[in-house]
Length: 630
Ligand code: COA
Ligand code: AMP
Image 1 (tube, rainbow, N blue to C red):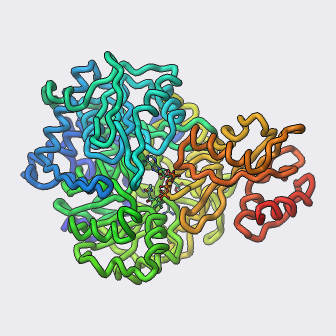
Image 2: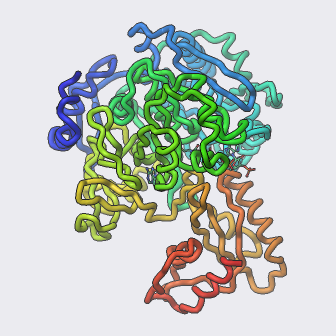
Image 3: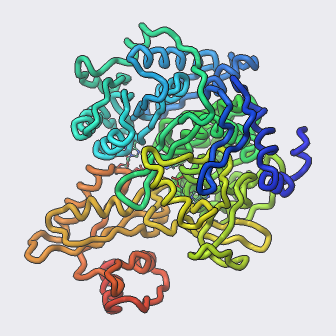
């Protein structure tokens, strides 16, 4: 047992904050570097800086080749379980390394080099993982776009990342619905100003995509003629990937992750947060398009020598609410991680957990949840029926790993439903008011993290460092502003209560109401609008639009709603779940003209609200209430 394991959580945490360089030097020593770092931390500006700046490594080497060197070549690295196609496929570390090296060689054959960007728009197939690791192998910066986003969203990301190549598949499969991807890619590339030089496409048996000669290359053919590529030495601070996430405006932010800090932090997290050991079967039931997929389907389980599961299906309907338990049984899953919404869907269809009784899930040690608030009824249901420890942990795309967790790798703390437990070592979490002053214990405020952030967190916003500083570092100098509100109780447990900005969380998917407002406002009959996230039993939140029509517009409420729903689906994607748009006569505003979104949300949720003193006409609130009840 390592020394720290005997020390307990509190001393580990204190050490991470008081002696960060020694602390992270030890963690860095757990990795295979090409050149280990001699400098651990270099401060830059605004309390931000670089981790391991003179270290040299390759992320694909750490994830794959290092496991071959450790004698794990014949262990399963990836299990692809796809109820939507009826397929199960295994790749050992040896096989995955070979496929990744070949794909990396194929990229090189198309002229892609270190620093070039590659956009990946793929369903949950092993080739998505191979493409990500293939980019990492040659130092190309991948940017995965979630398959549920529409062509326009893809175009926005292509224009921002300016990729040399785009990697895609002929289709995705949503339960029984086959969704052709290539027409979406073609539309996005037509719309985007930036034109990638090539498109690499995986033809799936369900749909044969049309290819544009000279630009589009078939995955199989390209790999058949490729030579395997060796890992390219990279600086720790070289970018590994860009992952776009919703902010308060219509323009998504490209979160940039480095190579060295990312590998050190994720490897540490596998033992600390998840209690995982080499050989464990680890399943993050998410999508490679989200941060959970990046960190805990692709990278961390491989850094830790585990077997990772890639599941192309849903918690329900593929074929039933026993799907998760079936996967746990079939692949002897030890650690399961998903979003609470997945279990709310299971519970809705199988309230007594009868499906659970059909399967042997004795391999499961713990269930982890994140992505949105873990509501106590879901916590209780899971705990009661599985008898397992249920671990809530809080994190964000920006941080890439848990800011708060129950540090089971060193000490299992008693759980408190509704709390994501304690700050993870490295994250000095505080609660402050709008002026940045600490609030009394137990009071709600903004959740911030004292700088510097530990390794693994975002290094900047792609192409817009000013936005990075303005959004995260400048609001409260000396701290990272998380955008979440919450409180810390007298025992130090952290409770995250929700976003304090215009970001909403729909079925664990992070979306921007500001972006939806931009789409709704573009309708010719709309004079003004506002979109808020209202509480939803299953998805946590769903967007609702309030719309003011232009004078003289003759469109009916139903027609307008139908058109707006279609516009949001078309511009953002079905995943936004925008299904309600209500015509109102007026919108509640402050005297200075600011729409009172918070009060509208409270009304939509049926919560008590106080009438703000700044409101120009309090009677509007009653009208809104009536409209929402209809
Ligand atoms: N490609 C194309 N379309 C997609 C898609 C993808 N990868 N993912 C979702 N969509 C579509 C769905 O088909 C659906 O379309 P529809 O309106 O035509 O039916 C729409 O986007 C909404 O999808 P979703 O939010 O997933 O709702 P759902 O009703 O199909 O499923 C849950 C609800 C709770 C079962 C599902 O959201 C889920 O399993 N969530 C797990 C949590 C998760 O993965 N979180 C990610 C972060 S951890
Ligand atoms: P994403 O960047 O998509 O991972 O979404 C991050 C946001 O999800 C956070 O800012 C929180 O609002 C919310 N979130 C994630 N995990 C939790 C959790 N365990 N409890 C409460 N909210 C959470």
